[in-house]
Image 1 (tube, rainbow, N blue to C red):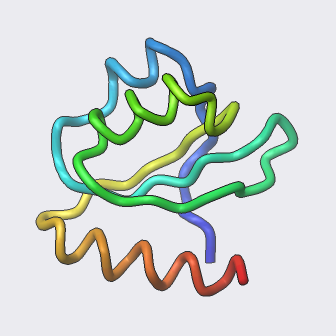
Image 2: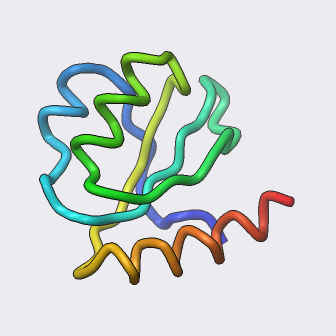
Length: 81
């Protein structure tokens, strides 16, 4: 099941608005196809994704811990396989 959030363009504004907290994120292309699912401290992860051009769009959800973010990301990755 994809994250139930609207896509946002992956740009500096999106990175700046991302919380400095653990979470899960999806990177997508212009058509909204999920390219990858990741987890970690959201602002740091999105800075890296933007720098490497890993996607055109992003959506995320916060979690309370990195462990929970990892569990949630793993369940989201399973549906991409």
